[in-house]
Amino acid sequence: MSEPALHSPSPFPDDATHLALENVTKIFPPSTIASDDVTLTFQPGSFNILLGLSGSGKSTLLRLINGLHQPTSGTVTVLGETISGARPETVRRLRRDIGMIFQQFHLVGSMSTLENVCSGALGALRGPRLGLFSYPKELREFALDQLERVGLADQRFQRADTLSGGQQQRVAVARALVQRPKILLADEPVASLDPKSSDAVMQLIARIAEEDSLTVVCSLHQVEVAMQWGDRIIGLRSGSVTLDADAADVTTEVAMDIYRSVAGT
Image 1 (cartoon, rainbow, N blue to C red):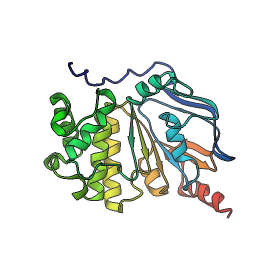
Image 2 (cartoon, rainbow, N blue to C red):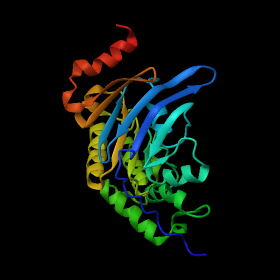
Image 3 (tube, rainbow, N blue to C red):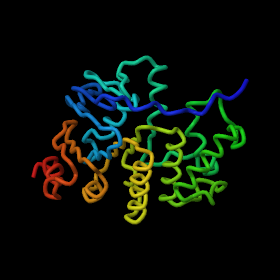
């Protein structure tokens, strides 16, 4: 049986439902409100920052967008289709257009960087893969191209667990890019990195997002980083949106109000 063709991203829809949440509430049993009547629309190619402390609802929003969580009420629309309440096969198909970067990298340490990157395309392949050369040649070449983009092509055969934290996160970025996504979600991608590595990773995500016209939704808790890299700042507190503004219009004092409100000061 021949391999399926590599995933091709879906075209952007012409309307405003490219990515949207409408009156979305998520309640975890017994009564934890993680998202509280959230309505947001994300424009194609925009770089959006979710800003707030841990527990403010940032990660929940990202997981509602990629279908890992289903809302208690409300609607989540991705690339013109409703992902909330959709059939499992529809959710799986839509997820192929959504790349995800995590705080803890989620690489397989014993595998090479190149094999870790190739694993990003597993959702589009049939059956399990055992070893780098079990992946199609076309995919391996494309994965190497993505490692080149993040500056790690020379480390393609190096074990992932021998890389620095910043390098591992760059591998994770390349893994997400192998999906050829239209939407890129990043959940605290620099929280575990030192300032120099954080800046390098955010600069990389911003550059690639611009090159590939990706819609980025990135959660952060560092105000300075958010204001430097985001086009739009969305402040969250206790699952509710407390700020939604162009980054150019947000002062440090306004951004810090999110945290002062949480602390009750």
